[in-house]
Amino acid sequence: MRSAFTLVETLVVITIITVLATIAFSAAKHLRRSASSAVCVSKMSQIGSAILIDSQDRGGRLPASPVYGNFHTGRGSWYNRQDRRLQNLIGEFLGSMESTTWSTNGNLMTFDPTFAWPALLAEGKKGTPGILMNTSVRMLTDTGSGRVSPWGRMLDRIEESAKESAFVEVDQQNTNAGWKNLLPPGPIPHLSTPSALPGFPQAAGVLQ
View 1 (tube, one colour):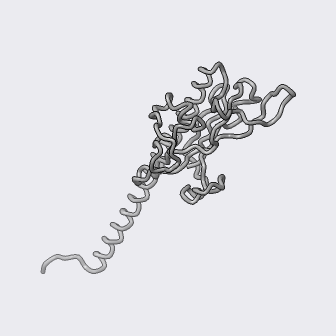
View 2 (view 1 turned 90 degrees about the horizontal axis):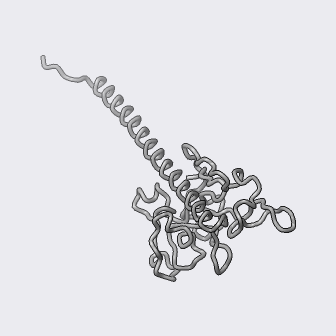
View 3 (view 1 turned 60 degrees about the vertical axis):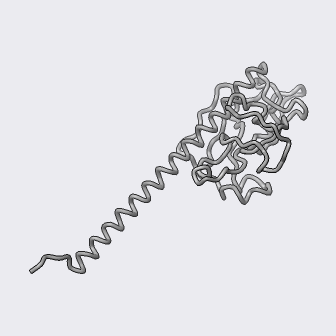
């Protein structure tokens, strides 16, 4: 008699292969998410460090547009020559190329992967605006103390600066912008968050 698999044995083998494939797929998905998370945390730290270095070059003053005194609070991958774009203020510390266009059309603006979502880049997409700058921190002012925009102000005037966040990653829950449908639906915890930078508002990287 020829030896052969019975129907039951065949079903058992198929079941085992299916279970192993499911486990392998789950593990691969977890690794990809962990890698994306690590890249995102690293980018947040880079941006925070660039802001800190720039403020040191400015004698302790946080960056802001020389013309407007502030900048766009939602910062993303695309930018033009306007000096309210964060890349034009701290881009030299991030390796951002100089923009040569005034266009507000995303297809014509300069692209900076530092501010793009790693998960979207991995899918061949360019991503959408990645961070929201903090518009209000508690600072010492000429009239006492209050919550004001820190940008363009002296860093050492921020009260408990290590407890204030300079920026957070943006998702559909923390913005009402017209492009919110292109963002992740809600916060996803990273593996870890960047440590607070000494004497500087913490670069909060708690969303993906």
